[in-house]
Image 1 (cartoon, helix red, strand yellow):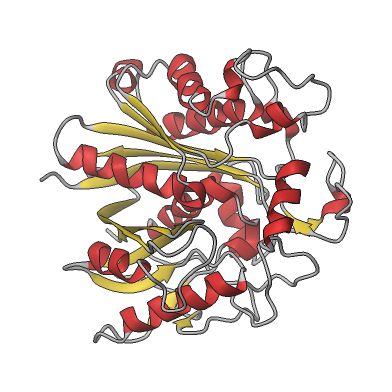
Image 2 (spheres, helix red, strand yellow; image 1 turned 180 degrees about the vertical axis):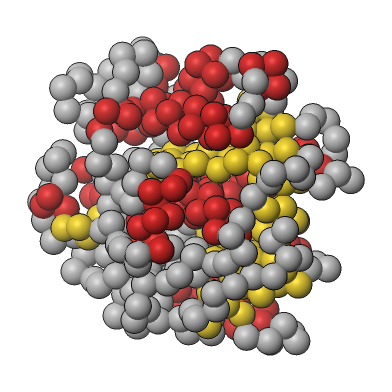
Length: 378
């Protein structure tokens, strides 16, 4: 089996327009979350809701595709340029894409200045438009796949790409994820389920947290089976399922424990970047699974909570946080946490990572699907 590495990573979110600016904001411990009343697209009657949005609205524009597709093309180009991929290399790459809600804003009429198109009258009614747009605009002629597994979509796309490269089918893969949750009908739906963090602070594991804080975001990673110049290595991709309920979660963490063990097999795990989306039930279940995982002789685990910086980007959140993690691992360190956060079973003061040590990134989707990918420091 081949080794797989992150050759390049890029990110666009509320923190900044590229990975470097996002990392700089985190180094300065500066959150991007603001009251939704400041959002240029309107507050949807939720002015006090903390949310994160991309400042440069020009990255969404384009007549050919939907807004999420345009953003995906933009961030993919940034990653390809950072990786220094030539046209021939890129043409042979595989493309894996993740998105929970695709171009929902187009369909729901949430995009100002456009008419909502009828179902199937435009390609942006299909999630797969995102992958097609990246393939067409960047000249990726290898296979493409789009995964829509709720909030685990982006991390699942990464996991599938890792497994594909490890089998030796090709040398390079481009992984992209995007979600734009600031759409009125979508926020209405999340509020109805009790998942939206109305009136909450910005501390996802706090006993007072009641829901997530939304944030726009996209990320792209270039994977390579050659190590030279890579940001970090990638280990196992673990998956577990609760088989419990379409919305509720089991108190013991359900299938997350199995996913953690699968991703951690044979590795020196020192820290975790959890899902930590701010829902009370989800946070309790994740803490329970992490507590049991750490109890098996691994010692205290470090923890990095990234959603307090940038909000919850739904299906893009896993890959977005993975891109940030990869950038910091290149420096031999973990992203610092905002001051005053609740860590629970995780120690939030760990700073450095030694070569060969592993950090696990977790994503959890509604319906009890858990994805975990191991990141290994070089």
